Length: 242
Image 1 (cartoon, helix red, strand yellow):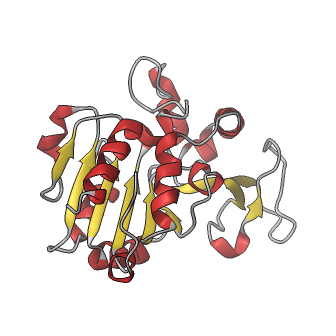
Image 2 (cartoon, rainbow, N blue to C red):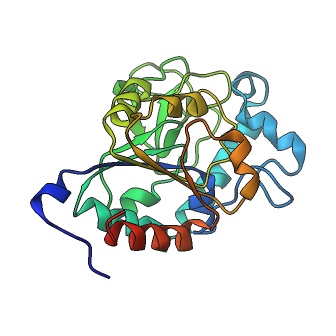
């Protein structure tokens, strides 16, 4: 497959918006469903910011296990296809995922709306300047050397503000093509953020769930496929000069 690499094409602004369905292609569990992270249903409490105060040890154990599971998997074909496009076009990535699979596939210019398993921060100091590398399990009593506060994953929990909102908004406003992959479009404020897409942009939604159409925040073309096959189909369309 050959992609047009003329100078005028290389200036094309593409934004990929990725969700749990993309990481699922690598074997990362999604949240909902029989085999999801929120099954059994009481696990959902570890996605609430209140759990840092009421269930700290259990919350840390849940996220430690989640991180270990992510580190055992590898980028999918879709991750690598996005990286391939980034070598030819002006491609940026906005992700709702906390894994580092985009970067492990070789991508750059990634906004992690919901934080990342790569970092921890002290409780009460959730800001990039306080980030430390997350290289081992976090336990109760592990403290930040600067603030002496308990360390926690730098992951956005329900009740906290997302990262990179304004930068993500600018990227969407400037995009010529937006590709939304593997998200239920149910989580706020991420869902509403997609309403900032450039009105002239070509928009694609890659998701195997056909009922997604009732949740579209912006008109676009639906590709009712999984992330891997959907990305391959998209590259074919781009190659043929959509």
